[in-house]
Length: 96
Image (cartoon, rainbow, N blue to C red; front, side, top):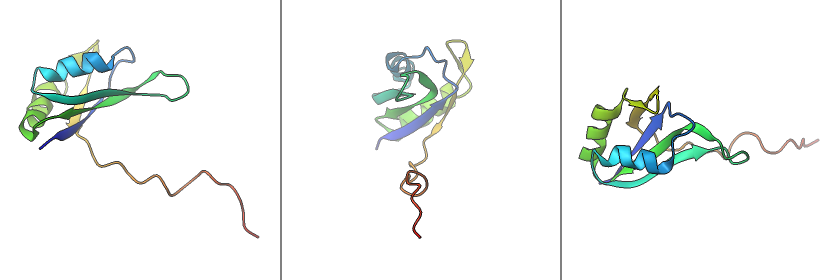
């Protein structure tokens, strides 16, 4: 079963390909994405990597958490499920 990992502390210069290559040393990578600002296209300094097997994901956490990538110490842990964003802002209409 696949495991999705959160990768934080990334240098803004890190690309999807670099992230994939780093994690591929620990096992089969399904996907690797650096999250970017939708307006500027600038990296937000974190990303997600999906490993094909749970064991590969655990190995990646153990081997890569705290390691240096492009001069920055990265954080690697299991990603939490995305929170529902439907509540909150967006509409400022008041009902009278």
